[in-house]
Length: 365
Image 1 (cartoon, rainbow, N blue to C red):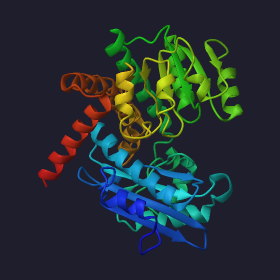
Image 2 (cartoon, one colour; image 1 turned 90 degrees about the horizontal axis):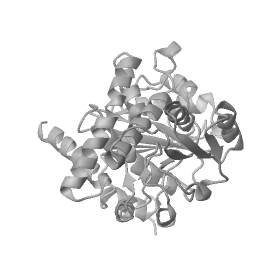
Image 3 (tube, rainbow, N blue to C red; image 1 turned 90 degrees about the vertical axis):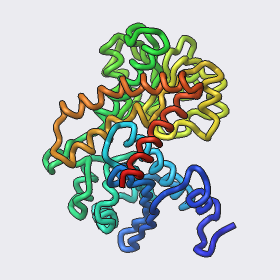
């Protein structure tokens, strides 16, 4: 079933009627000369201009791309609110294979599309886009972050993203075991790319044992070469979530890692990772709680990167950003406390806190 535009009706229902919708603006972008097809979703500007990265991904179809943009943009509203930033939530997706379809001309065309929004949306890196890409986009759009230091930016935001996830793990350990130390704990990381490889370093520096997996054999080999002791690999995520003695599971690849098939067999006592939208559908957070698994909400613990790119708009200072990212430890503990007081899962507690901040901002207008 489609609407009058030919778009699948379920996408429009999500946008206008479901609890996952409520977006202020969704822009469909096309530049036939370069092959650009993109979706820019602005969920909320209650706290300020929408801020979120650009994902370049070979979606199965346009409907999947729109749905991903909607979900990611909504998540950014909550992430930015919980990070204490004066930004709303937005996200963009470019449809295509970045290895094959990404060109300078396409990125410049995309930059013009973002610029046409006049600052309502500020872009950055995400899956499939990198600092060098943002340097190109910035040539057409001043509302671009995640640029290289040589081009007035802060560089790779994955460093502070990993640091924030690490702080979330420490807070989880404090809440569950009464001690923030991860020494001697076993942590499983699914995805050791941009963020995951930095996370491995934090964990090994503290003395944690690490088990890794990644769909790319070269990424696994790089980690094993860098950390010959205390790190081992398993074949895939299905094997990782079943590792005996796993204390913490860290999904650091794409979303949907926590679902009806993975949660029942998960051996870890804590889930705390960098991936966005880890809960495959509403209700998974309750399934985790029912199994006694502590879930550190993804958009809270992975906010280090957005803290960095937001700071870039005001003249980047790494130590200032790192200090802000370190507060993810306290924020995560506060969410666990709110969840206990309200008798709800941590994900619901985080949503309540974020929604309260956005509502207060709208009321103050």
